[in-house]
Length: 204
Image 1: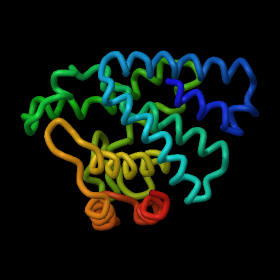
Image 2: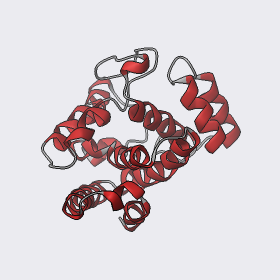
Image 3: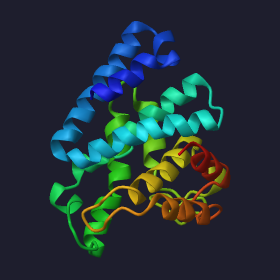
Image 4: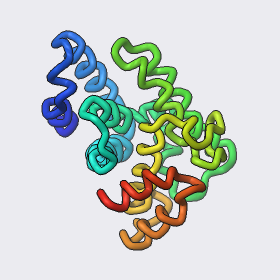
């Protein structure tokens, strides 16, 4: 959580907001991240890495300071719905069965539902819900495509994929960076927004 505190403190938008609004956001995010770390520390670590890397990519894409801060919030909370997924499923060292995959995929909807109930974070709910939509419309849960997918969700999805490829998972070892970059580039126009792919490859 200390890492995310630093992100809040250095964000121009956070400093420009009303103190009570900033305090409410900070408190809500701290509680959610602490709960996620208690439930599954690997997911919490992944979310912290994403917040850092998404800021770098957002800077490469020339996002305004307020947009960068919101992007960090989406990144740190994009997997918060995994609080509703048993850790035993998240740690499986084999391919998921169809029923298990459905439970994991439900985390986007569950996360959006959680955020919709929290003052100061409600506006992030649709962005978290869209965090696994694909540029070509083959993602989930709503099969959005192209620019119908919110920009922040498109960025988080691309950086999420890169982080997943370059870090060990229970079911496989990390890929080499060159191979991960090749796969991200190959997904431009299908899985990923081509402009965001350019930003990821430049920033990471």
